[in-house]
Length: 178
Image (cartoon, rainbow, N blue to C red; front, top):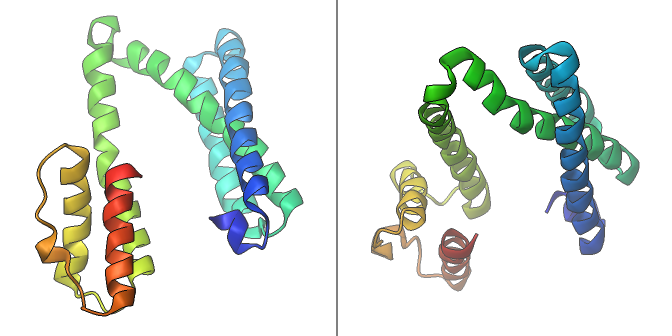
């Protein structure tokens, strides 16, 4: 979506995603070797520092293909390093007997952040004609859909205009298949 907003083609956007995935794989392998040299905690700190720098320094100026490629490579490698070293660090901190429980709690704690991203995206897409109460129902509905619960979509009905119905259909489709 972002590459399309810059006027780049869909295939260019797909190439950027593929490059991110490839650099993530390279980052996982590189951080595995760095864990042996620097230790897992230092490697995790390094990958988080690199991710933070790329998000604050590179992302705001990524408005061309070249800067997006640099961002994708650096951020992908640092994200791959994070996911490669996180279980090792958790195992060192909590002990190997409790790695599964600790990782489950850590990953579950990310859900609030994901819901806020969904909330912000949907409010931006749907627009100002949503009331605050209805806007808060969207992340809850999405969570229910992802949990496999039955959802009554009548409370999401926004307006009877064709444009609102199209956007609602898009949101429900995205909640089911996104």
